[in-house]
Image (cartoon, rainbow, N blue to C red; front, top):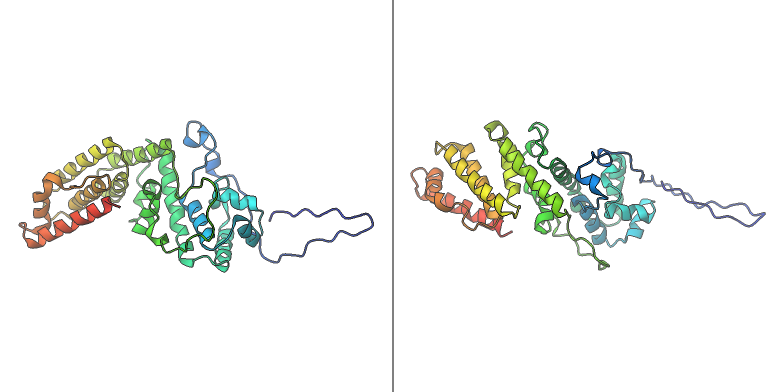
Length: 317
């Protein structure tokens, strides 16, 4: 709890303390973290970082949709306004809060009128920020597949659209029903999580390294999810890499019923569609139709058209 300084009374008058606040305070204390002890040469060592993360932008959206100013939220949390401002400017990492304090923060936001569905997104936002931070920190350095956050579980769309939020600028679908802010923002403020050009380059370079270093089937999930995210890289060299990856996946599909091979083909096609390719199957369409459709029958054609439609829809955002 931030201490409140008493006022100096007149001589002969006893000091009257402020009325007690029986709510459990949320501690603003920030313990040392690994992010405060970067090695020289890492992105954080180049100067003060002010990256706006998904959880920070989410907290801002939740506060504004509940009609709370920073000062009012600070009052409700029994903190000084500088702490809330620090969270929303990334000067104070929200993840430095103790688990119990994070639970109290959610509870008090709900009591202040915040949407519970939006607060439920906070866990995914923290995970999305972790994935981005790990990739940016690693850059071209390889991370073992057993340690890589992209290889643990299959990511649902509710997570992937938070990971890609800084690159698309599109508000994740699970947040689109939030009430609009009751007061307009003042001055230049972010409307999405932000990465600078150097961080973007390191993020996508790491995905390329990850995909190249894990060609085998036992790392298929890690490779596939890295390839999916590469579809949001706007560099022409990455589009060329994705096209080459699609051809490689097709060569690996030596049996038309080998599901993992065709999942790889589909992943590269979806990534190409994201990168702006309006015909992600291109010259391999007849082969793809055959593979989906057992002799290229009507069922296979329908499946091919469905996958192509979905890939194009994703590419158009």
